[in-house]
Image (cartoon, rainbow, N blue to C red; front, side, top):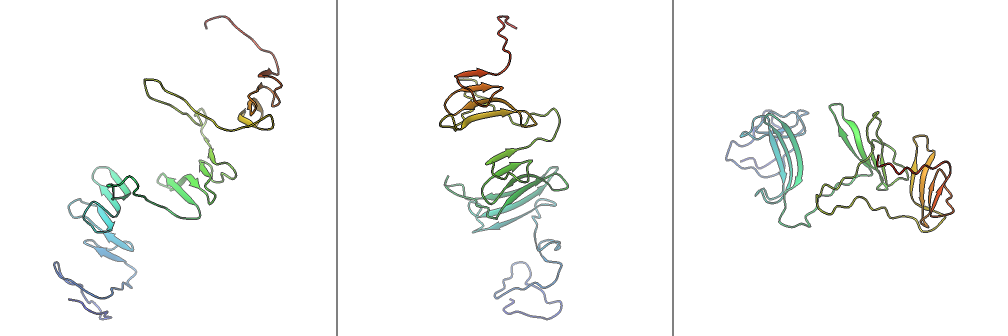
Length: 212
């Protein structure tokens, strides 16, 4: 049993089944390895699964705790999860001035949540936009909302606008030129941002009776 801090070179921890008390300080830059050679600050390997490992913070009985899990069995899966699932109010909190989610082998930023709660997908500076979605790839749809229910299904609800001084929805071209605006008072303008009636079209309009 190791009961005190030691500076003796080559001092060993207890063998399997042994115990230790007191503080354990690691000063070697190689890190601390558990059942495997140390290659980072803390390495926890699972001998039952080759090249895999898990680290749990909690009581360790499998039903609670905060789990970091890595599996390499034909497919590589890394998981961070809250193990306590007995209650739907069980919570996992991530706190930081801003959070980024990186993808790809070169850790390319895919999504960010800034310090005000604004979310950018493909946009590293969502600024005053609560949600900014940017698609840089040609011939790709920027955003699609689908209700896959085969019974009664609803699309999207947009809540915004109060009167003629604001709008509920605004549709623009890539160069920011207005195409159509649904104003807060219910007036719809096509080719104009100031519709004076329920439907105001600036330009020619064609009404075709053909079924095509």
